[in-house]
Length: 305
Image (cartoon, rainbow, N blue to C red):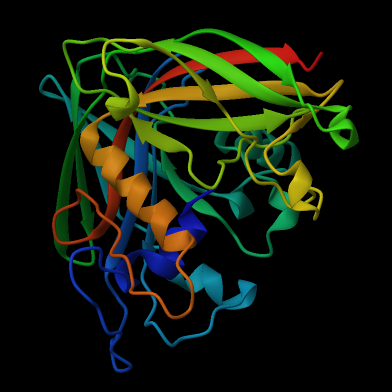
């Protein structure tokens, strides 16, 4: 959920290989897919958001957003010859208590949204993500079939971490999170991470995806800036830092190269200025926009000392 609305607004608007000029007459009705399957600690059940893209010059408000969700689709995940159907579930179908449960599961605040969020979920609980296993997504919607495949990589975990004191006296109550990761030398590795502070939903930093080009086969110390939140201090002096006493959770994820390229192009598209070339977001869904990605998850939790 944390990314579905951004996908809806941006996926078909950008190009990283050649200049892309938006067509004012574009009908904007491509299917947009955002789906994931996870393995590891606190893994979420497989889920898929289906929406339709917007023409570049269209405006969007919360009242109009609901019409872009795709309802009544047939969504299936196949693993080792077994087919697992995903069931459509909308917030409006749930009681307030159930809405809170779904929001906690997918990492968003239902009270902050003014539209009916819908998602396709594995309600049976039978499909469990496993390392180095391949999962095929098939979607039938509007008389068309869409297809994507992802493989969950083995986990390259955080070995250890600490909170570093800042030398600036103005930041005496803030800390920088540092982690140590030992990269395997026998494969190319890719990661993404999200952070949660004091139980709030997980959010990503401006650049939260990276690969092992900084030190393949070595143990590396790296900062993990705090994910961007609506109530972060406006002073850039504090951006990315954690306040002493906060309870921090980090969702650390090993991802494959396709999922990495997707998130990197998303991140670059977010920071483009108004006079920059557009960046086309990379995806892996046939005849559609978006991603079906596999995550191998590690969760670390600590109080900032």
